[in-house]
Amino acid sequence: MKQQMRFGAFCLFGLVAGCQQGGGISQNGATVKTVASAADLKAKMDAGDVTVVHALNAEHYSRGHVPGAVNIDYEKMTPKMLPSRKDHALVFYCAGPGCPVSDMAAHKAARWGYTNVWVYKGGIKGWRAAGMKVATGP
Image 1 (spheres, rainbow, N blue to C red):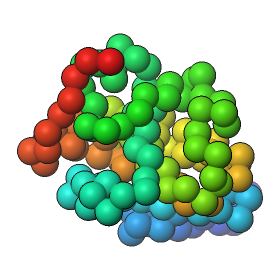
Image 2 (image 1 turned 180 degrees about the vertical axis):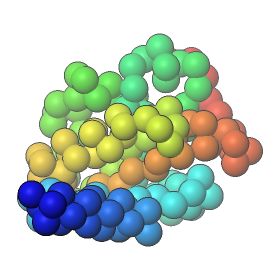
Image 3 (image 1 turned 30 degrees about the vertical axis):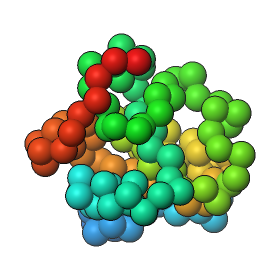
């Protein structure tokens, strides 16, 4: 039993360390990657061909979101709400570092076969803290 617990702790440590270093978790052969900072997300957006998804509800979105982000509530998300190209870059974010919704949405997209999936863990709080412009309204 102790050996199983140590192995479990070791696996959990590896998972957390991998995610913190910009790695990701594989879902059906697709890896969910991490956008390291607000500046990196902005650069990704400026480069084009990316869909940034605010994964919380419409009320949260209207109070403040990344300019250009689309609002797709994780709880209501379906494959039809996402781009038809499975290799299209998707970046999910939510409220902030403690919010799990962006991870859940990204992994759902990966399970549906999307292969270029990212999470910005800083969320809208990290975006604001970095001094980035915030859009409001629907």
